[in-house]
Image: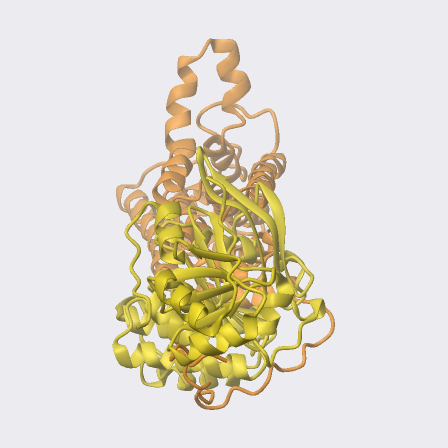
Length: 327
Length: 282
């Protein structure tokens, strides 16, 4: 099945995020045709996407959709069968001080259980010439100072995640890659990660965070890259994604777009202008929009109920997807 | 802007997260990697346990073998070799440490953190070789001389004891230490190729214990050609080099040549492991 690109062009994306400048220099993580095969399984299938700084980009997909593999490809841990991915224009392998440029939290078990939290962080700091006091700073930042000398194997899943985040922040990097950072965290921890990610993005950093939880992503991320079975499903703002995920979605084409949009909004509908001049309306069904247009004497050239992103998502992934569209 | 309650206002960064710090010139290299590996090496318990086991086996067997010889008035044709006999067991403990230096990274997943800090994989292996090699060399030489002096002290009343000033003795003791170091590096290289702790330890033990049993089953002409190249035989050659009392067969090469061959095995395995590491997914 062909991937459904619902994202529209880059200029459209930037138009929605009104405060963002739109400029190719701003692309920090650039994936082009990224493909990874494990035996007969195509884990990542021709993925191309951009991640920009100053916002949280959510990387959404069901379990097993290739998110972790993509993260590993960005880090150079796995080698792609085709395509490429760069961070700040360079392959991860070629970064002179990797931890000062990219901070990563991969699967939780990237830590020797016999090593203390402090020794783990200190060894990483040494590998990139990072000062020792920074180790204590990040331990403080994630709230692990009291258990710094305890062996990491004795940590709960939540503490292990915090240690992983401390390691990511160690080099004070401009790019952060978090793979399922809220796994194992309690609600307090989830909110902490959410605020941390948003704070890092508001510093102007690039934050790329994967999750299989749509609800969590809708709260944390500004922008989304959505994949299923290793293929691109959508690349768009969260606002747009949530609007499209609502049950009703109708494509409307009319020469009097502005007056109809105003009326639809007044009737509590949501209007998303499309690059081709049409618009997508959610929150109203086709019949109500038709009646509204008739009452305004507006001609309609098209009035098409369209499948929601949720449907597209389910269809492509063939799996239960754990998310709810926001009300 | 539509009024959908999706994203809350950006929250302030918790605590101090200053904008990304300036990045210095140059790049992370072997020096940083060695410092990192040094910290990693000493911050896990298995290092202390493996080193303690090596010391215990080398010196324990030395005391046992030489006290027995002295008490029973045994004929000791090569007192140097007798004092170093514990190396034939201690080599397994140092081999386990050499294996763990890399295999534990794969079994625990910490290889991902290591490669995040230093993505150039040959540099990671080189740093491990430096750290493990230096520690193994110091421990092995201290053990070799300690075992020699303890052994000779115990043998002194038998009239068979050796001294370092006798021809070939200092060299035999020194080269025995180098033998232990080279075997540890061979184990590290094998673990870089095999990547699994149990598999690498089994393979290492197999080379030392099983090959000497299997090779004699081959046709006689091949047995002679192969036997002298087995690490276990090279080891006995080196330990016996003070008096040339090799018990299996007369070697065609000197202890120093044997040591060079063993170092070649270790180097070949490390290069193969490094090449595979670059080719394989971590």
